[in-house]
Image (cartoon, rainbow, N blue to C red; front, side, top):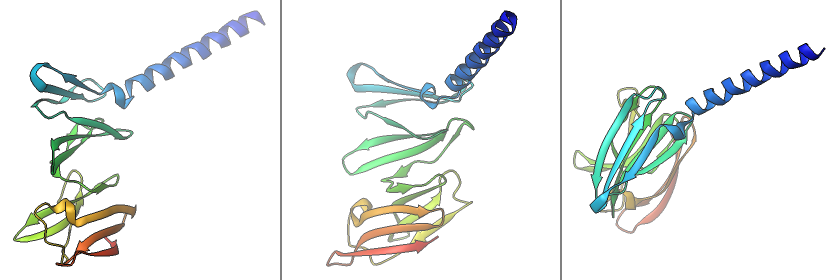
Length: 182
């Protein structure tokens, strides 16, 4: 009886150690670090769970903001004033997105941001890592602004295929709300 108890305790202890090690190994907070150096220099290092470096970058006078947004996903945002650029990093797969200027919303696979393209102000909805998978332009009579983020009041995904968008329209800056099927 005593042997069975000791054996059971050992098995439980080993399982607990394995679970703790597994959780630590796959804990996203162990995949990144931001160092503050001298003279307003900052260094960001982001690694995959296996330790392989995905990003190692320095910034001067811009403190990068690293956020854990999902089990395997981080964002790195850098900017000041009216313009901020956000990149998404999948630490499991080692994939890094392009930089999105003044991002206003995101889901698990899409991002929403304003952009001035082809002579028009647009709101772009696209796949985070590959615009060839999904890309959608929302073109309206937006309020005239120099910086696109000021025309957007609110944006959020209601589900995988529906976007709520509130923005300013026209010279009078009329508030408009839309539900957009993507």
